[in-house]
Length: 203
Image 1 (cartoon, helix red, strand yellow):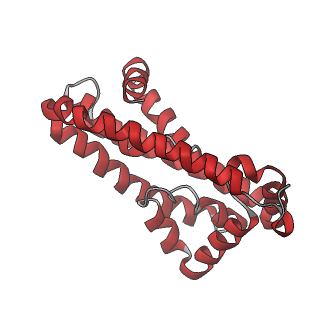
Image 2 (cartoon, one colour):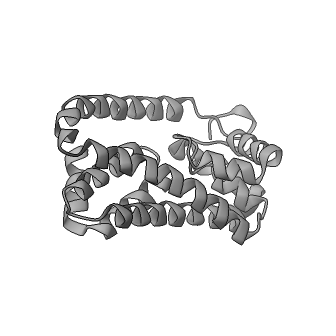
Image 3 (cartoon, helix red, strand yellow):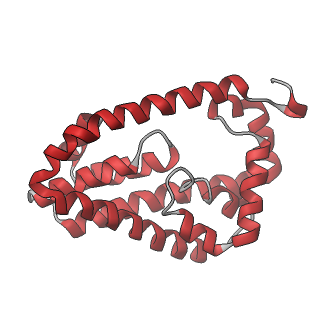
């Protein structure tokens, strides 16, 4: 996966960073923890600028969050729950997951949008209840941009600072990345098999 991400960034530059971070926002097995440090490493070798990579990464993350926000706002809670009943098995989410995300948003509001943008695994999820609850778009954009910029800057700077040592670090990171990705696949398959539809029955 690391080689594919690197090749995409080298071939497409800032556009590649933007598209990859957009994709990882809506497709959780693609990790920003790998994309952004690699982009920072390339910036340290003058393939791209540090500021440019941070802007592209932040923009992609915000665009992905906006897509999920729009889905939540357009469909609403009940239609999303109905969608989860029919297709949630393959997306590994259920109406209970929607209820939990909405409850979290109700308790924490804008602070949840800001902080969750910096928490792996739930960075994108918070955008859906924000849309369902019709959080004002300017407020959502402000919190999302701040959180995404902070997370992006941290990871890009890690890759940039490592610089010439990144390849040595990559010797250890790559096997770990493969192990993590394999674990993600296993968890996905486990959730697919255990997923329950309406009234606790398999659809």
